[in-house]
Image (cartoon, rainbow, N blue to C red; front, side, top):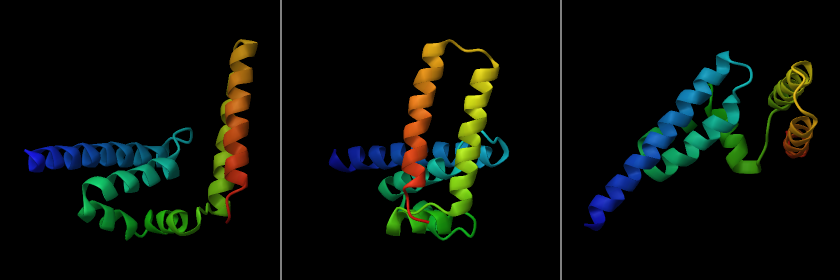
Length: 124
């Protein structure tokens, strides 16, 4: 019984990792969908559910360096920081251009501001 529960848990973690990685790959082409956090989430999920997929992702030439930097030092590249801040500014600008209600703008400003502070304070 325990083996079945463990297998089911691994399957759920692997499915979550695949979904996260899929969304992260889509985010490469859609600027408002954040690629890096989704790939980091995929690595976390794969570490719980599929050591083989985790190894593949960490050793991937495109995604691996960012994952290794994050795991080792909590680091975000300068390019990653710049792109994240540009995307957040564009999102906020779009909300302003659409004329959203002031309270939605305030909530968005607080959330984006907190995320921006987090990103900027990460090592390079």
